[in-house]
Image (cartoon, rainbow, N blue to C red; front, side, top):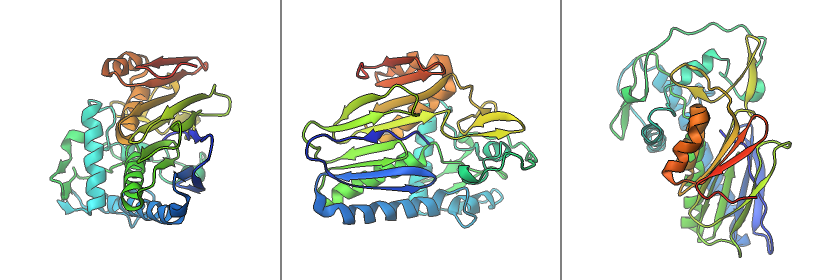
Length: 309
């Protein structure tokens, strides 16, 4: 879950489509205008499949069925298998900072429905604490067994995986260059416009904007502590959970943006950076990954070759 950079393509602009879904803005651009309608249909079908598999807010989703399985091994669809595999990859990459077993913690904080529908005055009863982490997910590629009482939350990775899936499928099926931006989880595939994809990275309107140029086969993600906020028992909280505390991570950074070879990696690193706080810039710099950090005062720090202003 990230703040949306705004693709701004100079010159002969590709055809594009913008809409709102999952309470966030979505943007599709293709270099071949003749395939826009087909590309949008491909993206919508992918988003439908991801929502059917992984929405915590739909009682008929696969992920809610898993929560009701009482610890029994349960077959999963290929889409959910892909999403769970990606979540475990992110957990390994971040040493558990991005942990898909934090669903109950989010519910306890009041994030049990779409962000626009949260009622901060609604009474909350904390669930019985389930001591679990990502290493306790028993996944064999086609079925999964969770500790009884664990609710998965794939929000830290599913939208990024969806961006990757959408972009690669559009390119594979149409041959057009494509940029898919799902609320700030952004993937490019195939040929680029002249000069590359020009993308404006900005979390909120009062943040200093930053323009970057992306080639094909690139992922970009921005994780924010300001976009999805609400009040819980009088405290301002946000959606990025530190799995070690079960609470919102300390908001050292207003936002962290990361560019990588795919959106899943970019999103995992940007989310983990929020959780790691002051330690994050040195960590990501050590990985040689471009990243941009904006602190609570609006000061910007970049590492790994992120373009300078």
